[in-house]
Image (cartoon, rainbow, N blue to C red; front, side):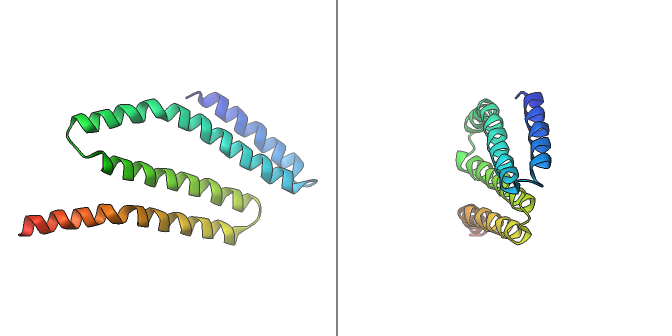
Length: 128
């Protein structure tokens, strides 16, 4: 990951947002959204190889990959939710920001239900 490119993109975007906000606040929000998407693309591209390596190690250790997938999806939901909430805050919509965060937490909970059921079944199997 080229962190310096990401930092420069963020700094330039921040300056543009600050300069444009008094004149065209909608452009400021649009720049923030586009920057978030661009940074997310950079980060995701750099994570593909390490995540594949970790998945290979998990499979070779004999652990079910579904647990890793659930954890990865939960982290992804958390980051996307955080980006959306921050953009809402930047646009002055704090109530929508809170709603995004609540929706993200609910999505992670729903995602984890099959995992919780699996753990409960395993625990009941040990008890019997």
